[in-house]
Length: 243
Image (cartoon, rainbow, N blue to C red):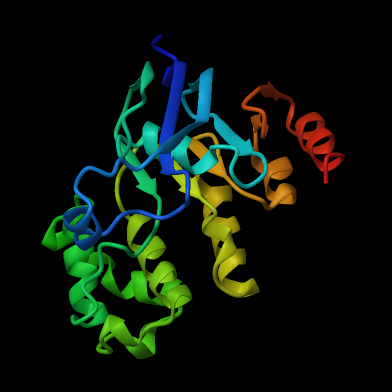
């Protein structure tokens, strides 16, 4: 196990949703306290097992609803699996739902200090990195603007630029390249180039060209909750034929 960064063993996760697709309000429960809402259970992941080696670039592909984001949240400790076990060896930084920790009333600069501290950076480190953070995010002109005035893309760029400054062994990335213009995506690819083989990366993306280019192995999650793991070109080509 010394060379394993992430171990996922027999992991399953299911959710319950109301059959009518609507959650009861408190008023509805008060008016009809004996009414029971009926739910249907569905698995997002079912008996999934795989290992990610240290410093491996391991990608996850599959259609919407196949469980990709659920998997990343389980690995990151946000969700608890209903069964199975996940072991993470090393310091992990999740790049999931970037920017959700921002305070919209604070300026971008204030949020860099707040978010950086949450992610484990010291004030001294933020002082050192802050100019680089805004330059990478292409937001130098908006340092003193409240984040509530940012577009979603601007907020995600800023959050990503903070997160890459955090010292970590493992990065969990969910569709980071889906935001920003071509220039920002180029910066993301350059960042990937600089860390490939130096960090463990668990990467979810619909950008199949990036998956092919960077991955050592690929996990293909399918709608029927089965899966395959293999060579990036083979997995991407097989998955592409299902469109």
